[in-house]
Amino acid sequence: MDLDLTPEQELLGETVRGVCSRYADLTVVRQMEDDAIGYPSEFWSHLAELGLLGMSIPEEHGGSGMNAIDGAVVYMELGRALAPSPHFVSSVLSAGALLRGGATEVLPGIADGSVIVTPAWLEPSGGFGPAGVTLAAAKEGDGFVLDGAKRHVQFARAAHHLLVLARTAEGVTLLLVDTGAPGVTLTQQMTVASDSQYRVDFSGVRVPASAVVGEPGRGWAIWDQVMHDAIILLAAYAVGGARYALEITTEYSKVRRQFDKPLAAFQALSHYMADAATQIDGAETLVWEAAWAKSVGRSIDRLAPMAKLFACNVFRDTTAMAQQIFGGVGFTVDYDIQLYFRRAKQLQLSWWDSRYLEELVAADVLDRVTA
Image 1 (tube, rainbow, N blue to C red):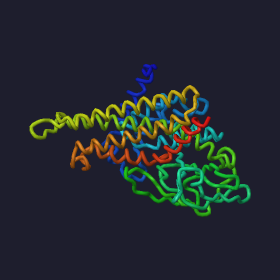
Image 2 (image 1 turned 30 degrees about the vertical axis):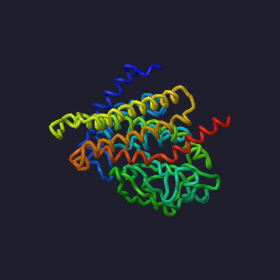
Image 3 (image 1 turned 60 degrees about the vertical axis):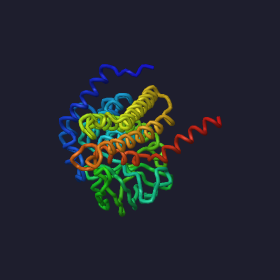
Image 4 (image 1 turned 180 degrees about the vertical axis):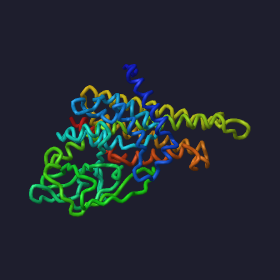
């Protein structure tokens, strides 16, 4: 099995790392915490110049048409830097759903960075499955009227449009709604990662029939497939974050001395770090397998949830171990490890949490056994 990257993919990773280092380093990450917009505009502009905002969009719609392996290369570097941007919600999730739904007129704007779209999916007391979508889209004339609320809508203040999962008479339907439409209210939420998330309330929001993405009632089929594609990239993000967290932890263990020797000289601590290195390599291999399967058209129904589940657990476990090695100072804002620790936990909970991913994998395992 050949796991070597092509020279072009190696250059891609180096380029993304350089842009993150220059325009979205950890100083910028700190500045963007709890910010209303949540990302630096200069960083966003450079991602657009590199064609990275259109990486999931075919060339005929203004994108660069990268494959899943290219995407994983990009997201490992974004995870390493914890780079704050609406890339995942706009260039991956929303672009993927709009492409599958045939609403391609918005894609060139997403690709050049002039348009940001973010999904409005989760609801108070709702779950990750289709039954959790209860936001009402009542038919009125040629359009719909929206009433209800969504939570954890990332970068809603920065977005031009919301990709809303709503329930019509036909079932779950995707609707493209302007964030500035009358009746739309944005309320910023505080999160463990201090990123940009909002509660969005819809009160009598009128949208035309042309706002439907795909066909009424087919929204969940589109969303479920887009999520399977997208969580491979989140798994890559987790691997990148975990690997960098381990790097700064091992460096700290070499210079921090206790009882007249460095922390790295203590066998128990060195074994913790060895275990973490093993788990990270395993998670990365699973990410490459899932990305490869996607790139050659094989099923990722099992691989994608496995990759996100395992990689996010590894990210969380690695940063928790790192906090123990850093000790009390690791929880202070002066040290970088707390940035990774908090984001690892949030990533584990977001975009299909561990329990939902386990259910997806279990269903596939049981189906195969039954067959």
